Amino acid sequence: MAERAFGNQTGNSEGTTYTVTGLLNGDTSSSAMETGTGDKTVQVNGTFGVGGTCIIEGSLDGVNYYQLKDPTGTLISFTAAGLRAVLENTPHTRFRVTAGDGTTSLTGIVALRGN
Image 1: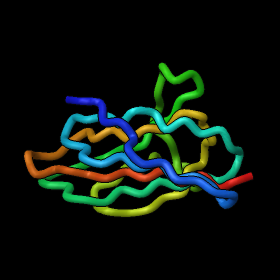
Image 2: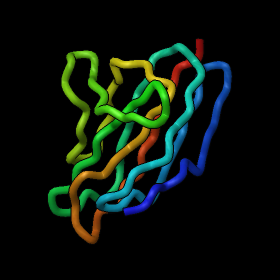
Image 3: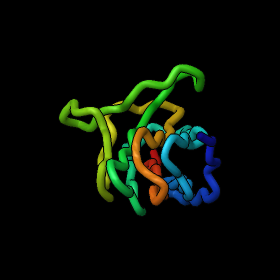
Image 4: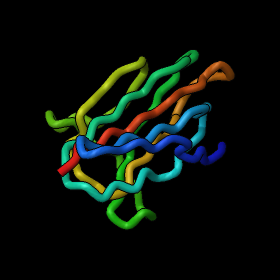
């Protein structure tokens, strides 16, 4: 288990994206610190391996994290590559790989639309 830092942040008037790579089974990303009030979308790509699962968590204080939901109220969990809108607008967002095998290696992207 390791914490993987967001290695790439890009932004312009349209919004900001944060990218973290190399998420292995049991890893958690650092927190993407978002300051805007726009819509948030998350994307997960890569090799999930056997049983690979990645959840998205958010926090108001950067200490206590809770699994986030999509606009239908469903907890966000990826078992294959995909893209989901996020219901809650928390200032801290992170990825957590909760299952997988030795081949699991994921990339997570958080996109925040500008104000």
